[in-house]
Image 1 (cartoon, helix red, strand yellow):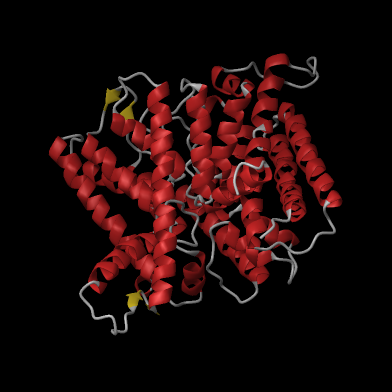
Image 2 (cartoon, rainbow, N blue to C red):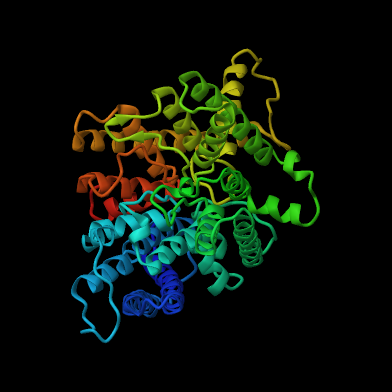
Length: 515
């Protein structure tokens, strides 16, 4: 099938126009915080995004509706473009603080060491891609030093990225019959709340906003200050993990805040259609829904296992603290939220053992429910892989004439359905592991040999699963090729690899390198 590149250009343009509104809204935040020096940076970002988007939509506005291939390429292209252009506020605010172009007319604080890192465009793009993909890995050394405008932009990119830039675009611009479903599905989503995809994304945004306000209220009630509650409420429900503090949730040294943050991360791990049913009063979906049931089973079992490992190694002084750290860290890793209350590693200095670290890696790999804000393989795909493998092995012992079906949750799959879903899950799993292997290989090449292998695996897994926890490997001192590799890992992880593979195939074909 021939790819219609004009349709891709039009849809990417529409997405950029919508995302430019984020920069416009951020001007208000800068003014409210009296950081007038940041206003031009957001204005320029809005103009660049909107201008490029308008140019693309005008040039390619008369093309037909996108098909599945075009939607896949659009998703990969749009996320890459938004990730790059989203770095402009970081770069421009750092530049403004370094040169003070206002000549004293606007109060401009001196450039601090943390913000100065964003004078390097690659670091600005790293922070932006980490935000929009809902990852939360950062090259900012001390987040407290950043202007509040950048605190907001980081949280805002994660909040929008958590539900999806294409979902936002569909909610604002889409009309029935406009190819909205193919774009929606290209962002690794398939669950629908209503038959109409436009009504579905509208309902998702209502649920998402309600959960965000509820999260902010819960954190305020637990004793978190307002600015911290707003930012952590946004990034928590988005399972993103950016914080306004260098030591994340540990900064507050409050067990109540730590326990209060756990249900925020869990809420972000549950699929939006299930939230919809629960809000309608169908509480049984907490256990009746396959994915939701396994979210609680996996979170519980993993937390108990990590508690046992930490208790055995004597990391913490009391059993309650050991359990609290294990619960928080495992839920944070598996929900891909990326908040931290304890150091997993210190780069070349070992903190957690290999067993404890790799257990968190397993949680990051699986992720939680499909249709939520979580990345990773998704639990339903893991269940499909495990049950599908057992089903394939069991078929060897059955006669050829037997009718073979597989029960996954409340679905009774035929042989053809099993083969199709099992193949898809296997392909994603293999490509996922390949991405991890390449990322680990690049970082091992870039880093001194003193870095423990499990810590390198941990940070690459954190990037590709869009988690944000780190073992002291990721930071401002990471060599540029390592940062570039993690940017790619974050990008392919957010899109679950397939759209990126389709984009690369299209590029290679266009260049005559693949037929």
